[in-house]
Image (cartoon, rainbow, N blue to C red; front, side, top):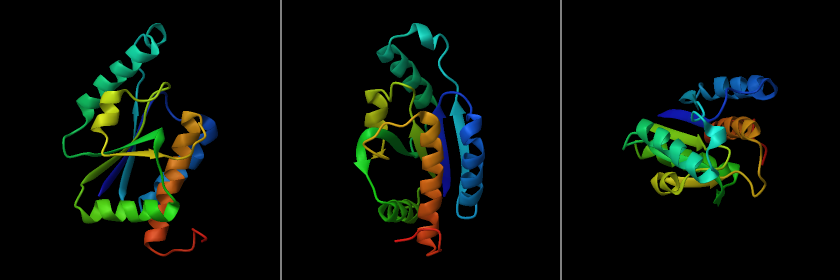
Length: 157
């Protein structure tokens, strides 16, 4: 199974770069994994939030394949424990999904068309985090889920 982390925006800020790289490297012991950073829409600053979300949605939909399993990170999504996330990943692998995409939308969130396309909407927290921190938290939580699946010591119950 291939895991992809998609994030709309600029490259990783230096304050999260080393952590994102480290957890991504660790995930590679379990699954193929890569980051796809989707460049912001041209003239983004001149667009309304709604127009920007629609433009980002068009970019994303052009890249998504029908068979891709899309997990949208959104504060309105379902919250999971780390153990449930591990089980969720195992279920996706067992179901034969070749590619799972975790999507961090743009600054104003994801357009409704992306929300409808998503196979699952996941909320890391009821709190709102900066996108750069979400990248780090996401990578760490997926790594944690991998260690839970292998019954390794990283996760403490």
